[in-house]
Length: 461
Image 1 (cartoon, rainbow, N blue to C red):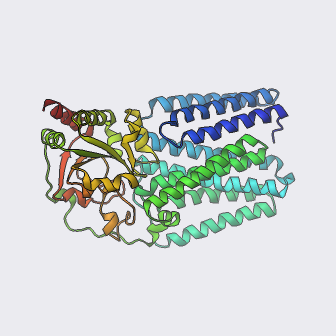
Image 2: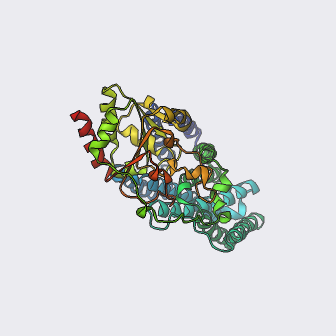
């Protein structure tokens, strides 16, 4: 346990206030950049204070090496990782946080476990349990997002009961460590908790991954807060509590946006039957398609156009081209808006960040509840790389993995333009009947390339 002088505790309090202000700033797109900078400043203050207050630590050089590795890795991640890979990066960073909290608590236990108070012991066990679940759960989430494994729910006969048994065993092992502290009990708890993290995420389908990211983020925050108590660091306690609380609120809000509870989102696949095939494959069914010039004419003579961005927009890095198209339409007196679904993309706020990168005016970014009533007045809804968030199966197909999820009412527009590379289904693996609607026109190809041609067509008129 680290014993910090009074002045260091005061400076840590200042850093904690910076974290609170940062979180407040991150709650809105207009203040998000400043919030991020304030948070970074708080972290810098905390690091400097750590060195200043513990300059005589025996192994301070190990902290310096770890800090250098983390700084270099964080810099290259920030500079080189593409926007499409940001959710995977968040999952990895989140897992690293949970794993680190678990290791810190484990080391503290190995050194002082026999002499800890019962409350400190409870905090240690909690950190080990939750941190381990967050670590392996985040790794599986990364593999799903990177499509290194199937994005569909992985279920098997008796899977629900297997999960219950492993969870019960992990809790029993944690209780064992609490009642009778031993290194063996700690190792068993860590091993079972790591397995539990994998088992919890396996049955989650691709469409629900954003909620898992948020939930695991909350787990990491709680484990960091508990580890802060274990080692006597107030700043970790405050920062972890902030992350845990905000992550929990975000998880509940996103589950509400998906139209079902967190438990159903996480484990509903165990009770779900396989969806019917619906007959012919999507590739074999006729659709109406057109070229960029035809789409340009359609948009140029509209009065109101709503853009629906999705993960495909991020893949194509077409956000700036979409902004250019919107500017062209606005200059012609056409009303333009962007429909933002809470779980569009692969992580919370993915589309907001992507469009902010293109300097899209904030007042044009409308959340689902605000934009949905406007679709019926729109001449054209332009869906750019989105799929699951506009899929009517969420309303009508009880066997669908996205059934019950509130969607954007793009199907209520007078005309629909669907930009996609192919007829492949979305991340949830479900075909979208909207693509076969008589109101829908498909525009196939890379979104950046096709949008560039549409912009040229509008300019030419």
